[in-house]
Each structure stands twice: as C-alpha cells, then as structure tokens.
Length: 342
Image (cartoon, rainbow, N blue to C red; front, side, top):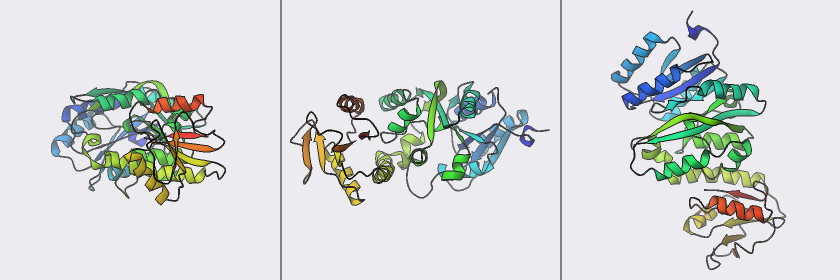
C-alpha cells in the first residue's frame, strides 16, 4: 500500500515556478530525508517547465509520498491556496523551492505542536546563506527574529516586521478553518498578512531553540524582486492591523501618542487619523520636531503610563530596543502601555 493511502502526520507544502534546478533538488531532498514522522510532500506547479517536471518524476520513481498539483493562476497565494486544498494532514509545514530543511525539522516541530495545548504555529531559528553582495539587511533581520522564541516575544514584534520566516513554519490546519486561507485580495506579503490575522485572533506562535531552515538568499528571490514585498506593501498591511488593534484597545482615559515626528511617521499618523484613530501628540529626541496640531514631548519628559499609550513609529533599524528599554525603565509595559512598530 502506498504511503499516500495511509494517514500522514504532516503535509509539507512547497509551491514552485522557476527555481534554480540545483537548489530545487536540494530542497526536495531535504524534505524527503526527514525521519521520525509520516509525511507527504505536496508540490504545487505554478506554471513551471518540463525540466523541473522531469526532476520531480525522477523523485516520484523512488518516493511514494509525493503529490503534484497544478495551479495555472500565477502568484504564490493562488499556488499556496490550491496546495492547501490537497493537504491531508492535521499539521502543515511550509517550504520553499530554494531552501533546505534541518534534518530533524519536521519531527521537532511536530512534537512541539502535538505536545502543547496552546501553541498552534511552530517555527525555529533560520540560517541565512546569501549569494548577494550586500545582504546586511537580511543579516540584521535574521539575527533579530532568531532571538524571538516565546509567544509573547513573537506577538510583541508583530508590528515591526514578520516575526517568523515563511518556509520555517508548521501550523495546525484547524487555523485555516477558523481564519481562512492566504489572501488574494490585495497586493501584500501573503505570509505577513496571515501571521497578523492569526496573531490578532490570539493564535500563539513559538520557536524551537535550534535551526530548522537554511534560507538561501539570492538576487532573484521573490522577497527581493516582487512588489508584494516592498516597504510600502509591508507598511500598508501593518497599518491596517494596527488600526484594528488600536480600536479594540481603545481607552478613553489615555491619549494616544506617537514616538516619531519624521516624514514617514507623519504619513502614518495621517493614515491612522483617516481611519478613525486620534493621535494627541508626538515624542522625539528633538523637541523642535513636531506635527502640526499635536503636543510635542521630549523623550526624557513624557507623561506616565496612566495618562498615555505610546505607539513607536521610529523605523531606523536597531533603535527599537533602545526605545523599548527606555520605556521599560519608566515602568511602561509593552503591549499594555506601548507598542513598537516598523
């Protein structure tokens, strides 16, 4: 009897279009050599070519747990959603066509989800392998999110940037029944929108304390080339969910104050106010920086947490922790009295 006729613990979902053939082979091999759990590999062909299909055929001759699905509509969200319809397991692991799994990734993440009552999304550390000359931004990002492990750390980081790397996650398929599939409605980073949607509904993420994925960064990777992953696309989806959070947290006894009075912060303030959020003042290191009609505070002289709720909108890399530490010293509690955004 084929493994595809049996129950499987995990469905590994891997969409592809035109990946590098050598990387594609390594990605598939890293999945198929996982041990300790029963799994299927669901490959979604999003308009590839015969060379890639021939590679898959060679693997299918050796492995019986490979399924190939075709999705003609171009776009990763369409490919992912088509693949999800065919995933049979209760747990779904994401994988990309140019990355590699750690040898024990599936069993380690499966055990975390299986043995936890509260955790519904498992991730882990990611190791960057870049062929791009200047990859300092990716280095900073990976180093920062690799330090996020607990549900609270991941939740508090959600408005800064995506707290998990998409192909590093495994999640319960019940989340799809509760909150829907990947959005295809607007231009946005499909994974970040999904994480924000889940986190806003109280879904808990956690990471295992080891590397689960080798993330191959190259000049043609979608995160570097597609408009869906531009700064403006991230800002757009981040602000939509920030508005939702602020409306749910509305507290008439405290004023909303934005930390940041630069050009980008002003643009974000305009968006918030156009969507029903009233900002009473701003905080900055330079008291001369201000926003018309708003009270200006120097960062050393801010009211108490009984009077204000702070939204940090300083986007400079590395400054988030300085602001977090400063507010914590002043007895502000992250999530209750302030949030950090990107």
